[in-house]
Image (cartoon, rainbow, N blue to C red; front, side, top):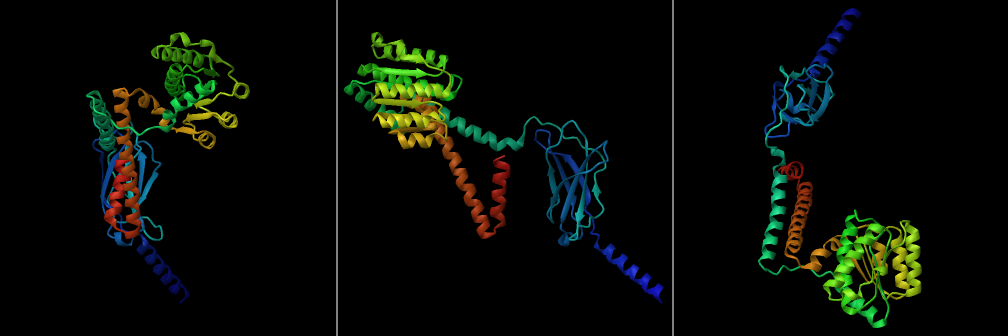
Length: 387
């Protein structure tokens, strides 16, 4: 009697275990993904007969000459297609898909019979939206440049810091005191130093017109040379070449705090009425700005270093924040190509802002309403348009 019960129990257990194995997917096919860069394979298969009770589908791959399989992804029930990413176009792959029951039991795999190798296409369709964005951005720049060249007046927001240059230099002239210009502490290979030379040209021209003394200490010898050329050209264009004094544009030291110590001491001794700090700054920004504030100078600062901006904003009268600093050249020159480029970049920023608002709004609506349609639109936007 005991043997019969044991045999029956084993039979019942075996039958229950067999019932837990889900039916597997069938008809797995793998083809090269069309119009891509040779890193994708498209898989399709028929759903398991037990799809409504599954936990999902496991997709695996292996090299044609390697029996070791790698799990790629686990997909939700109802999925019958998948694009395998990050493949090597020089290797051949085999794939397998299994159905996973709620207790993690897997079915027999549906496997590909022949190896598949992804191939590089002449046109990568996955980058289509990138091309559209590039055309919009570049097209806006070209259109505005053409408009500027035809004499159209392109409205550009005023930059208060640059508008204040005339006031600051004029005040220094009235008080019989000098103007101090510090072009940062980086060399000429830094984009902020290059932008600083454009602003220096404007300040120097204004100083020449007002017959004001302009002093430019530098921490790099190459910056000194570039600054001398810039100031000399500005004085020449203002019709005052005789007023140019190269000795007022000089090299101090490459050492960061040695340079700022000199600048600080010079400010205490000469008390310049206008101080300009435009370029790449680090810890010395607070020292310079606080010293200039203590001597009562009008101060105009500009940098693209985010960590230093709070010090300039707190201690200076006017601050060019990041992009304003780089836009100074176009703003000051009024040259059509530069003005058109500046306006074209504004259009690009507008497109980016609209995209951010659309993405955030779509994700919020999808979370609040639970709409599958809105969620699919958001997924397409984030996974296809933005990649």
